[in-house]
Each structure stands twice: as structure tokens, then as C-alpha cells.
Amino acid sequence: MNRNIATLLVDQMENYGIEYVFCVPGASIDAITTALTGRKPKLILCRQESGAGNAAVAYAKKTGKPAVVLVTAGPGATNLVTAVATATLEHNPLIAICGQMDSKTTFKPSHQIINAEDLFLPVTRYSKEVTNPDTVSGTWDLAFNKAITGETGAVHLSFAADLLAQPTTLIASMPQKQPVSIAQNEDIRTAQELIKAAKSPLIIVGADAASIAVAESLETLINNSKIPVLSSFEGGGMLKPQHLPHFMGRLGAFQNQPCNEIIKQADLLIAIGYNIAELDPIKWNPTDKKLIHIADYNPVIAQGYRPNLQLLGNISHNLTALADGLTYSPSIESQALQQQIRQQLKQRLSEFTPPQASMVHPLEVIATIQETITNDDTLVSDVGSHQYWLSEHFVSHKPRQFINSMGFQTLGVSIAFAVGAAFSNQSRNLNDAKVYSVSGDGGVLMCIMELATAVEHQLPIIHMVWKDHSYNLVAIQEEHKYAETSAVKFTHNIDFAEMARSFGAYGITVTSKDQLKSALQEAQAQAGPVVIDIVIDYTDNLKSIVE
Ligand SMILES: Cc1ncc(C[n+]2csc(CCOP(=O)(O)OP(=O)(O)O)c2C)c(N)n1
Ligand SMILES: [Mg+2]
Image 1 (spheres, rainbow, N blue to C red):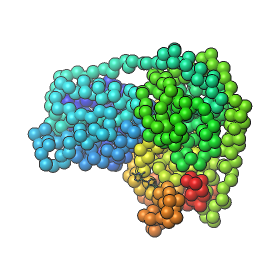
Image 2 (cartoon, rainbow, N blue to C red; image 1 turned 120 degrees about the vertical axis):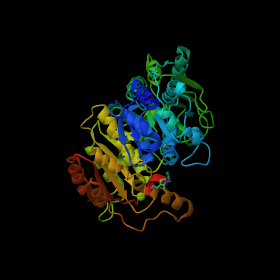
Image 3 (cartoon, helix red, strand yellow; image 1 turned 180 degrees about the vertical axis):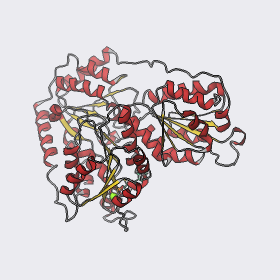
Image 4 (spheres, rainbow, N blue to C red; image 1 turned 180 degrees about the horizontal axis):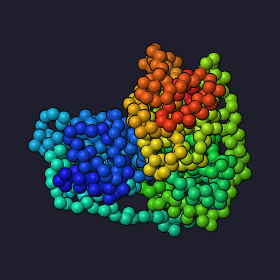
């Protein structure tokens, strides 16, 4: 086949180390799918653009690297918008490539036309329809660098079908070395002085810090300072087991967590890689306490987040510098409070209303997952009440072991996230790693199509549907606000195990904790995906999550 602009684009992907192209095809991009044949980036055929997009989001959450999501013009592009917005708000790098209709027909009310550049503008770091062959490589370079630097996020490029088909002799560019910035020594010293002057400092770790490199430097900082640590929903897994005495749990969205007391008493907050989209800082810092911001970018300044000092640049490097030579211990009162909170965190794992007959309590599911999961495995959560249970109670010692969508809080990500996570394991040769995944009975139907992708690739995904016949997270908030609910109940029972079998996956139904234990063993023995339909008892949700 003749070399054309589509080939040039695939050369760009290959030069930049793109491993996966998650795709739903269409005539406007068939030149690219054709050009991908036999090339390094693996094309993964998905079943809906949101699924393709969310698989790429999960790949980025797991690896810190962008994948390409490739979709067709018009409805392909509009279907992709939510996943792209999720990536951008949650700071996950992603390259969205859309087809466009032939240039002679664009921007008239013609077949499948949409102005994709404008469509993606508010949900990306960069959005461009490329119209000139000479600018293909340069625009790719620019877009890719925007996706991977600073706050990181999604970028969008679209190409008209006739441009993609155009013959070319142009050569693809190579990635350039990125500048690495670090905080000034003077600022590091000021941060050390602020810590030494504090009685009860508190570290809050956010999603942007969740990497192995940062976890290692955080370990040194905690060794040298014994400062207690809280994490956001996406910033977990950062402490080793020996540092658990300093782990105060995760920030809940409803200010009812054991950690709230230590937040109240803190006189210095150290926010490390905190993405304010996860939980508005006004919820944990309404009185604007002393704050140190440690991240790779300047924060948006607003009530609750007015840093007295910013340590900008490479987080891991700056934390190591901060820990260097620092000897500090929080006040006796602060240490006593740490112990008290640890006690409460432990206690609440066993203090719950026993489940009704033929039902399982969320904490029983979490305890069973906790017993089963190994270090290289991933746990994915969808959005809903199950997400709060998992985020607040599942303990992990590996960054990004637990992934979920908390910034955009996109319902219906789980199975696509599980697919993306499973491919990220393949690319890192983690061939025995399983992906455990949880959704509600609402969200699962927003991503079930990607179970077909998981079956086709025989991905080792164990997906648990927590069936309560409602959109529970909405229901409990309505109950709290109005003492009644509306628009949240499902009246028809869906047999998710049977549904899984019809996809070619393995299906199991579970109505007790013991059954779940053996179901997980049975599931582990399968080569491909498994769906476990769990009848869940949500009696404790209102009390545990909201009140
Ligand atoms: C795309 C999208 N639509 C709607 C919502 C609002 N929402 C958040 S949680 C939720 C209910 C989830 O129900 P389910 O999946 O059954 O989980 P459960 O809360 O019952 O555990 C809804 C509708 C959202 N966050 N995202
Ligand atoms: Mg539900």
C-alpha cells in the first residue's frame, strides 16, 4: 500500500511508544486502522467509544502513559466526549484521534458532521483538527507533550478522511526529552521550618502523587517525621504495611470519617499531588489553615486551597529533598490521636449490621477481596455506594492498585477500566495479574458491552456486580435530604450471571460470604472473564456513607 498521511500518523504513534490503540471503527478512519496492520501499537477493537475511551483512561491510570483512542467522525466523536472529560479532570494522559468527513463536505449540515475541534475544546488540554499534511507531525508533538506535562490530561486531534488518504513522503518526528523542574533549596528549607514549627502537621496524598517513585520518597519523609497521612480516593496505596500506624484513612466526601478529628486538629496541611477535582478542599480546609502545595503545576487558588508555600516540579525529587536532614515528631497529643483513629478504622471493619438472609454485606465482600487479592492484581471500582465502601475500607500498599473515577465521577467505567487495566498488565509482562472489578447494578449496564471485548481477548477479569435494585448512592442522598426517594429503584431483576454466560464469560451467583469465597476461587481458575452477581445488603449505607 502507498505511504499516506495515515501511515505517517501510525509512524508518530510508533516513535512515541504508543502500545495500544483502543478503537471503534468507521469509514472516516479506515485508512488509520489499515495502516496499523502489522505495526507495533496493538489495535484493540472495542464495542462502544466510551468503552474504548475508558479503557485508555485506565491504561493511563495504571502506567502513567497515554494510549490512543481512535474513533470515527460525528457520533464516534460525541460518544467519546465523557471518557475524554474524565481523563482531563482526573489528570490521566490520553490521545483522542477522531476521523472527520472529507474536507470538501465539512462544516456544512452534511452527513456525520460535527466541529470536533470545538466539541473537545472544553474537555481537553489541546484540541485541533489538522488540515495541512505539513503540520501533522508538529501538531502530534505539541498535543502529546500537552497530554503528559503539568496537570496532564486528554488531547484531541481529528483528521479528514481525504487528508488521511493523501500520499506523502513526510517523515515522522521523534519524541524529545522533557525538561524536569525541581523546587528551589530555599523553598525546601522553608517547608522544613514550617513542619518543625507545627504541632500537628497532616499529609494529604492525592491522585497526582500516586506512583511508586513518590511512594518511595514519601516513605523516607514519614520515617524522618512520623507525620500522619490521609489519602484521597485515587491517592491510595502509598504506604507500606509498616507505616500503617500513620495511615489515617481516606478522605470521605461526607465528612463523617474517623480522620475528621485529625483534620480539625491539624495546624499544617501538606497536600501532595492533590487534584482538587476529587474533593473540594473547602470540605477539609474551610478555614484556610497553613498549607504547603507539592505538585508539578500551580494550583487553582480558592477558599480551602491558598498555599503558604508551593514546592513545584518533580514530586518524588522534592519529597526526598524535604525529608533529607529532617528530624521531627508530631506533638504527644497528635500521636495519641493517630492511635485513636487507627483503632476506629480497625473497629469499624467488624462493626456492622449482620446481613439479611441470602444477602452479603459490603464489608464481607471487601474482607474476601482483601484476603484474595495479591500485590500485582488491580481492583477497579465503578461509581456509586460500592465505590465509597471500597475506597474507605480496602487497604492497599501499592499505588494505583485501586483505580476508580473520583474527579469526574463517571458512572459506568468499571468493565472498560478493567479491560484497560488488563492490557496494561500484558504490556508490563504481569501475566499472572488478575483484575478484580466492582460495579453496582446501575453502572454495569453502562459498560457491559466491553465484556465482549474481555471475552474476545480472554482477559483475566473478575467483575462483581453488587445488586441492590437501585441507584443507591443517589437514593441515600435523597433519603438524607428529603426522607424519601425518587427515580432510583429498579423493579425488574436482571440475572447478571446468566447475562455473562450469554456473552461467553463465566457467570456465578452469590448470596452469602462463604459462597463468595468459593466463587472467587472458582473465578481464579478461569482463563477468561467472570461475572459474579452478588445480592448485596445496603442496610448500613445511609449511616456509613452519608451521615
Ligand atoms: C454518567 C453518570 N450518570 C449519573 C451519575 C449519577 N450517579 C452517581 S452514583 C449513581 C448510582 C449508581 O448506582 P449503581 O451503579 O447501582 O451503584 P450503587 O450506588 O447502587 O452501589 C448515579 C446515577 C453519574 N455520576 N455519572
Ligand atoms: Mg445499585
